[in-house]
Length: 169
Image (cartoon, rainbow, N blue to C red):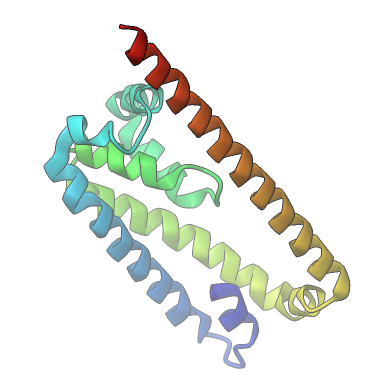
């Protein structure tokens, strides 16, 4: 959305408002994750994030929380932003620090994206409207559907194995 709005902007400074709005939206999203996760604590976090991932993030956050949160804020998907925020909140890392670091990271990321959109946006939009891009998107959808089906089958298999093991006890 930021890229589309910025690339269609006629004003040379209008993109700044879009960047700030995106940053504020991200902060509101962080708060919606922070509030319940902070209340649930580390024990509640384990319902949403795997034990292995919690331990990995916990070790990183204990030694370099600020840089971990900043990098999670700057890096684009598929980097696991939400698990980092959830873990920091569950471990009771300072809310103002989380919000400040995320705001700074998102400000950097969205500013770079907006500047790229200003210079490359119209060409990018033409490419997105091309037939080649449509086929690329269809391919991604197919891969996502296949991966989803395989994930569900794997989950069902694990549940069957767990139920069989409980039945043997």
